[in-house]
Length: 291
Image (cartoon, rainbow, N blue to C red; front, side, top):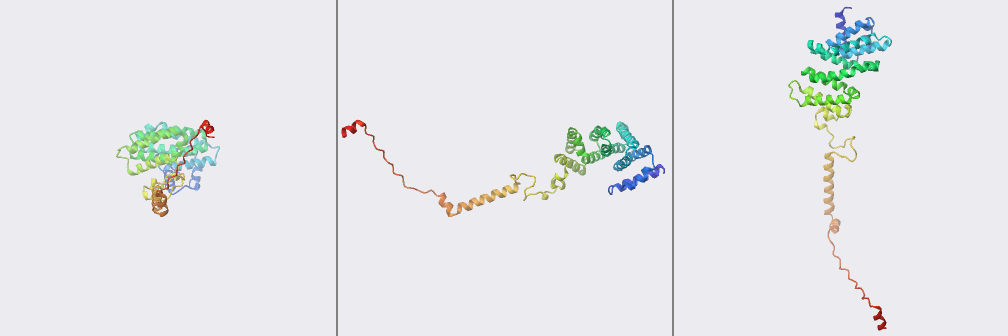
């Protein structure tokens, strides 16, 4: 099998991966017939040339290393290639920004694989991942740079937050700066993804906790007549508070208009209480003379 046929196979795998997870049978026979070093080179060429190939390369590396735990040739060669791409990122960027962005994509997609294979080796990815996102925001970004940063940050934000919360806060500041900027390359789609990243960060990267109207942008999806389940039972929405106040006021008006309440409210006049005069005290000497 020559290089051209192998590239066509990898392209077909990328197309299949867009429809869902790849079955192991799609590439198991192929990887068994290749030596690990040659396979690593082809995977390296694939993730640099095609932005869709990084998840497929990660799945192939995980499959081979899981099937043969003692054979570390493929994982070692792939790790050396991805770290070499990061060290030479400035040269790669000068030649092709597409390959520069794809090398950053490979960093993020290969990190979960190496964390599962070897926790020690996976630490080599941490600093490069944060540096990659910083450079995507810093280096006079164009529309593709913003799209890459938005996609990686929204997908791997929880992982980055678990690794370095302070680094994530710095990246969130970059997202805010991009949102308030007047850059013409920031289209509506990218701004929506950045807003979604801010929502994920606010709700601790749990998408199920984000209110629906934050995602859809439609105010009619808000819960107005029902109290949210997440709130305290003593806290009510504004509409409920207004309705409760109005109902309380109407009940007070009805109660004041009833005859009983009018009798209770009208003052009643009672006769004055007669004053009891106190007896004048007679000295003891006068009492004896009187006797």
